[in-house]
Image (cartoon, rainbow, N blue to C red; front, side, top):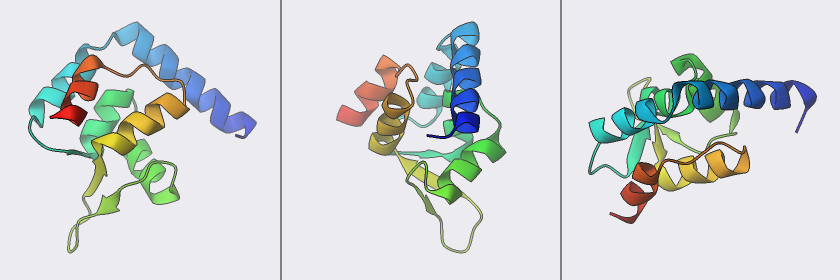
Length: 101
């Protein structure tokens, strides 16, 4: 992991701790029943801009896919949890519960 990448992850963690997990719970409840998150939901969960989440997916840092014929991206919940754990981000109990459902 590069130095710049480490700084960005630290800023994301700081933002998560400042804002709490309420945004995470709201983003998850919006898509209840789905086993995938949109790039916008990923952005809310990680407290980053939607474009940042899209860049993570496009760069392969976060495994996801594009919907054919659209610019929308989707990320499986399991991959989101793996990404958050790998980068030291707190994982919401709601996200873990959704993985099991």
